[in-house]
Image (cartoon, rainbow, N blue to C red; front, side):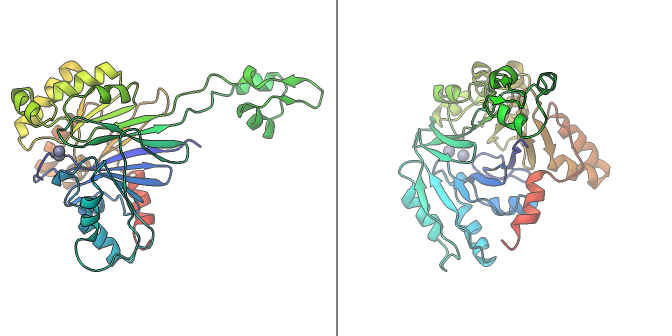
Length: 360
Ligand SMILES: [Zn+2]
Ligand SMILES: [Zn+2]
């Protein structure tokens, strides 16, 4: 069975939270392994609200601006109150470990579990089963990295019809041929794997920039990505401010998405000004029509091969089920998302959270 790969936006505001957006936090889940990319203040409550659960074993911080890591002390204290035993590794960019150790140790009592602190510089990676998370350099005026979840290539498609025509009996021989092994049938005929298996297929690639000005390195890492999550703090009218603070505009993020040939672009780290958000989305779509604005509670399941990425919008669903005017505005807001398909069921992260989050 193919591994499910999902991301859930826990916080999508820049700098400080608003009524509808928390500061940065992104839950990433692949086949039972859970990661948190950035952990702004209040992230633990967003995890509860959107049913992510507390099963993340790694928290990766892009840079040491407060809106990206102040959620760590509270989250670790809550997990201690719950009696957690499994370790959580805190990862930050080069030079971040003393600050992250302070964040870990803040709050007095001993934690009930180990929290090793590690640095993850450009070119470093966390290895997983069939994938890795690579750190890459970004341009934010201080030491900063982004993260790319990169899956290994998968084996090519197995031509079942041809295998049957050739008289290969279904069962273990199919698996051996699919894995690249040539086999000899009972009647002495040799069947070559290459005859039945197509070219290897690229694994999926999800790229999260954290805070950055438009950056060549991002364009390189994002080539062919299934999902690029790019910061877009400002609209074009604030271009100068974006340049001074080493942030991006929606249009800049979109141009980068076109250059890298990504399948899907989601803009996050959105300025508190509502009009700014509308403008930057319109500007981005003029360049990359599939661009979308992130919102808290947005969950994306990344598709395989030519499959579309599927989206669930917990926020719109909550508003719609509240009824009345709220419902109407939810529909309108959902319309902001180009191809949202709202499903009336909790996402995988939610289901895993319910199962794994409490009492483990
Ligand atoms: Zn930020
Ligand atoms: Zn920043």
